[in-house]
Length: 198
Image (tube, rainbow, N blue to C red):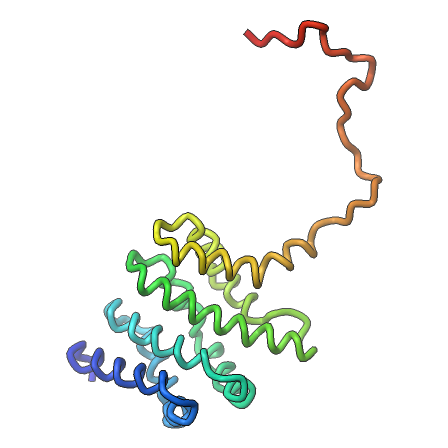
């Protein structure tokens, strides 16, 4: 039913169920809720509905270690259905609650990508790459100047955890062969009274 008066309470109910135990969350996953949530995120629904869908996805992606291992298939499904881009797009919305929920959901995807990388199955965090491809990295970087301190702190944590190491790896090594500018070379001397710039 497309009516917000039906969708919002239904989403809250599903969202509350997935905050329960692991069996309840798995039951929601097994009954195809992800496809419905993806539909709500990727189609033209009100922001309040997208917020509830994001919250529910965020709760699902926060599953336990066993669920993360067992349900890699549904996370791949969520990624293949384009879940990351709508979450990234919502990082630019004015509602801080939506932004925070999206950051939490993206962070949970990044954790999965990092776990995959740690197993040696992939050489890089594929979720980080998908977030970059969806312009999410730029949006997360922009959130470092957000007025809300929780959003600022979450953005900084995500950047430092999932992108700082990558940035450090791309810096050229300091091998001493790089040229530098030295003051006092070529016979130029600083005047005894200093420089006058007036």
